[in-house]
Length: 311
Ligand SMILES: Nc1ncnc2c1ncn2[C@@H]1O[C@H](COP(=O)(O)OP(=O)(O)OP(=O)(O)O)[C@@H](O)[C@H]1O
Ligand SMILES: [Mg+2]
Image (cartoon, rainbow, N blue to C red; front, side):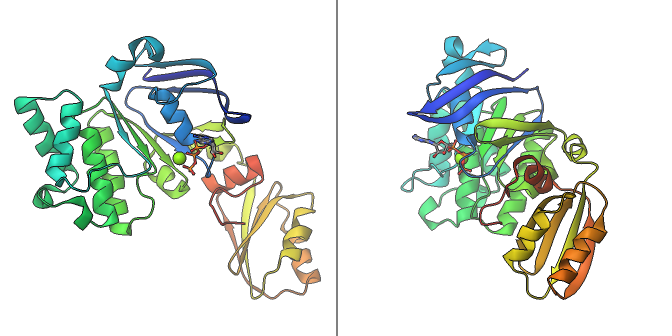
């Protein structure tokens, strides 16, 4: 096991940020931590990195207790922090070199580590430029280069694709898969279920400091296997229909996104749903049934939407 977290509790004053959390991650996994804002994802990885004191529980990394082998453990981990942490006054190459030195690299190992990290993130051509001249995506890639310069066994990436263009996003997702193919264990944190679904081998859904479900995407989907997801397009959706739908016994959840109402049904009983639309005198423009997504799993387990701003 690369990570074993047992009964972890972390409080910020009276606020319980991590609530009796248990987690194991095996060697070579590309493990996704999926959860909404404030779920406790960053707090959890900070605890794993020994960056935050915990109130209860134990953490083992690479089979060793974090409390006793913190320095040796940290040298084998690369962290891509949620907030970009590079020096704007140093060039890309100087930034990566600095991080390499902090991890104890010297001489040829340092030179090679820096060259490989720049190459891997596609920054070789612009290595002599400063991050102040970089786009958001390039800064993110530099952030990643700094985290992999020492060729760590475990890489933790905390929402590395937030606020960047789709091209950089794809580049980063591909690099994460490539790192994993090179036998690096990866913890990938995100609140975008599409990203986690597309690259991760196993996923834990985090909510309110707890892991509410974990498994492969297939296993998570099976949790709501009997559910049916129906999207109904209407010309003028309003919230009264949502309230009415939610009161139906077969309806687990209903949300509105633009002109589409998405309904999770626990039984395949479309009739009652359609009757409700007719009663409300809404014009239906389309009806689609879908296989449940991770978003639906989250909705069903918590009664809330995963994505910020979603209803
Ligand atoms: N230093 C702190 N002091 C007090 N409360 C904190 C502190 N850090 C985090 N919290 C609270 O703990 C909870 C979990 O925060 P955390 O940053 O771990 O969430 P997250 O899942 O990483 O969210 P996001 O997706 O927004 O990054 C939040 O409610 C947050 O407000
Ligand atoms: Mg976070």
